[in-house]
Amino acid sequence: MLKRIVRIVLALLILGAAVGLAVWMVNGGPETEEDAEAAPPPEVTALEIEPGSYRPQMDWVGQVVTRQRVELTAPIAADVLALPVAEGDRVTAGESLIGLDTRELDWDLAQNETELRELELSRAQIRDQIAADEALLVLERELLAQAERALERERGLRGRGASTEAALEEAESRAIQARQSLRQTESALSQQPLELERLELQEARLQLNLERLQDRQQRTALAAPFDGIVESVDTSIGQQVSAGQPLVTLYAPESRVWRVPAPDRDSAELEARLAEQWVSLSRRAAHVTDGSASRYVEFPLPQALNWAPGETRSARVQRPALDNVQPVPASSLYAGNRVFLITEEEELSSVVIEPQGTTWLNGSEYWLISAGDLPASGRILVTRLPSALNGQSVSVSEVISPSGVEEP
Image 1 (cartoon, rainbow, N blue to C red):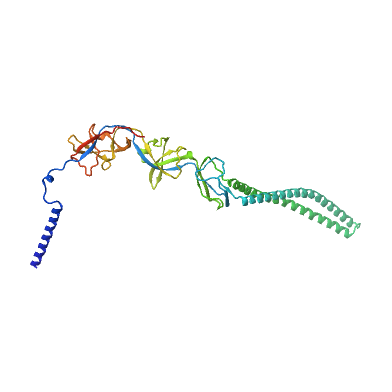
Image 2: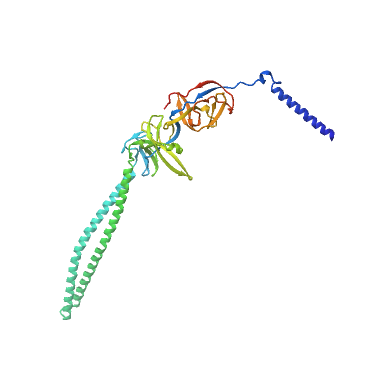
């Protein structure tokens, strides 16, 4: 057992010696006199601290939306006969956008109008019949009075034996017939106003249906409700469309806005100037999504800018000028909130700063930082070092100045 342990220990010692020898050979063997000397500090470029007044710029990305937009749909099921517009066309209010086959609708309108005329004739006939029955009623009442007087006379004659039984029965029969005729005329007169009212209700229903059909006929013209631009055409000539199917979408170019999500710091600035050289007022608004408020800035778009609704566009927003800010290149920023100062001894010293945006000087992009976080004079490290540390020695080979023409 002891021999086995000794063998294991010897094997481990041999393995460790081999690994150490390999590491020593990779490192180049024994240290030379040149290696023993300290490496020279890296050469760097520095930036003079020269604060001034600069206008921060931001690249914003937003979506084009429109506040006046209409989607024209098919009022009836029909075939598309004409399509005089295409996407992107400018149209004026009242201009026809699409033509539909309205023959079935025209037939329904003609049938409805015919039924209305038939009802008017029926009502006129009933009114004439009422006038005739009222005149007949007067006559039948007179005839009934005459029949009743004749019956009374026959009864008197029969009581005196001056008339026959047959004559009395005939007088009674004429009186009964006169009463029945009078009752029939009275019954007809009582029903005729009800029939007239029924026809009037039927006419009212037909009139409502006629107005509905006429409204459909007007809407089948599918004319532009305002001056605008055709956003989309969702049909083609010869296609059979159903009622309610979207056909043409139109928007007013003057109602377009560029909507950009922005933090409170940016959305509070209600005026902005874009790199496209158009100036407008923005509007701050808010809506609640999943319990958190999100804000955006809206810029009205000039008609000369051909941005279509639904497009995502980017533009550079120039904010009001800031005083006492120092421009530094992006290579000077470390971790997004630090820069390194170069002391008189040419050593690095880090300072925590807060970026205020970017600007463009002489064709290059610079970050703007508050000069209040910096000394009144000095130099800032420009060269990007992979592992910059406080106290690290550097050799300044070039000092540049941030002065230059600020680009819009």
